[in-house]
Image 1 (cartoon, rainbow over the protein chains, first blue to last red):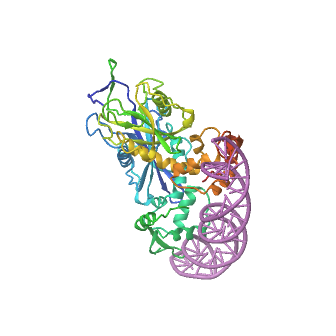
Image 2: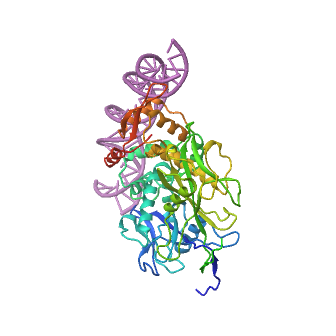
Image 3: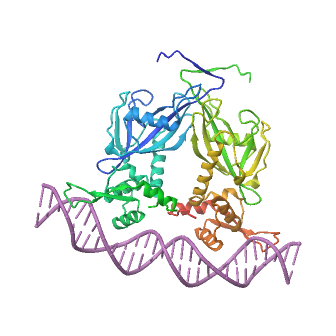
Amino acid sequence: VTNTKIHRYKYPRPSVTVDCVLFGINPKSDLSVLLIRRRDSPFQGAWALPGGFVNVSDTPPYGEGLEDAARRELEEETGAKVAHLEQLSTFGTPDRDPRGRVISVAYMGLVRTTDHVVQGGDDAAEAEWIAETDIVTLAFDHKEILRVACERLAAKVRYAPIGFNLLPKEFTLSDLQRVYEAVLREPLDKRNFRSRILAMKILQEAGLQKGTRHRPGMLYRFDKRAYDTAVRDGFHFEI
Amino acid sequence: VTNTKIHRYKYPRPSVTVDCVLFGINPKSDLSVLLIRRRDSPFQGAWALPGGFVNVSDTPPYGEGLEDAARRELEEETGAKVAHLEQLSTFGTPDRDPRGRVISVAYMGLVRTTDHVVQGGDDAAEAEWIAETDIVTLAFDHKEILRVACERLAAKVRYAPIGFNLLPKEFTLSDLQRVYEAVLREPLDKRNFRSRILAMKILQEAGLQKGTRHRPGMLYRFDKRAYDTAVRDGFHFEI
DNA sequence: TCAAAAGTGTTTCGATTACACCCATGG
DNA sequence: CCATGGGTGTAATCGAAACACTTTTGA
């Protein structure tokens, strides 16, 4: 707070932040989003997407990359290890932040919730997984960012093998189907789903479940090598 | 250049620019991109995407929106009226500009080349339509931006009715097919293409061509009303 | 009459959908 | 033995793809 160094520019410049929509699946198989409760004004006490300022420097190497900033903020605020992270869109409406001109580059991340323990961030901000359907308002324009993220996720799980990133390394086909049903918000036919997925030959078997109260299911792993090879041969993932 | 006002910030801030990949169809039915030749260093004399700094202010209303900046730059530098403009992605690799930290929000635009006369920009920069296949190098990371834009365009014309924005208001089905073949870089079957498009019922007839040296074709207009109505009834554009 | 591009239907094949019952386990 | 979720195949329908010749105009 008592940083004495001042940075001078000939023209006004915006602040640039990253905000992350981090998706996970909660124990009830709901699609959930990691939110933090804001400690400071504005929107003090409101839920918001995790994020923060991109580190920039006026001299080479000029600071960190945008995706690096997103990963750093996620780790600082949540301890999350992200299985998949991609840029979503950039939000720059001049009045989106009451403190001044802030342009935010939004990222969408997917995590295996099982891998991940939510920890209070280093600002002691409260971090929590909230079912996406329970989110009503968020700070700034974060609700809009979330809307865009949900749309993108639903579109992209259909044509890219990213749904696996919401599950543990090993999962049953029913687990996978539940992920798709949560993201797409529509029930899928079990037999068709299973045969379509298996026909792709991009899963490898990993033994049977143990200790279930019901018939144990076959566990699978996403086989990235097989997937990459298939893509090279013209295969296109599609659900 | 002799602006005396200095803007002071506690932390360093990046410059933010917009860069535009403006697509059009040239008379040979090639997919073309509007480029400007750089007047200044760095990359003096090199071809680059049109673009420039986002106007920002430290006091409300804090300057212009990102898309507004893109439209403004396009008009200033090229006189182009854009039929379709959408945000593409944001490029923020720390070393992408040798002058310092510059984050660029890239936009993709489509224009009816017929509507549009290329004019030298107000910086007297040379502006020219170049066939996309003839572009070998560009300033900064603009080649990468172009690559992303081409991918996005090819993906999006398949599932959104944006191809019409590359044609005059009235066009024949053959014109439209040539647009798709240029964007997708693959030949399409004439009969299948025509019946698929007409089955959508989103075109309205607009009389016959005149003065052709061959059999005149039916002219069509994209019928946005019909399209919007169909979408509301669950229709999904797909080629 | 020639060149140039517009226009037109049908068949085949593969993919998508709909659908209902038995199985293995732990409690 | 019961509750729970895992696992399986076929028939019908729909949509996509392949394919070649005739028409109209201006030169």
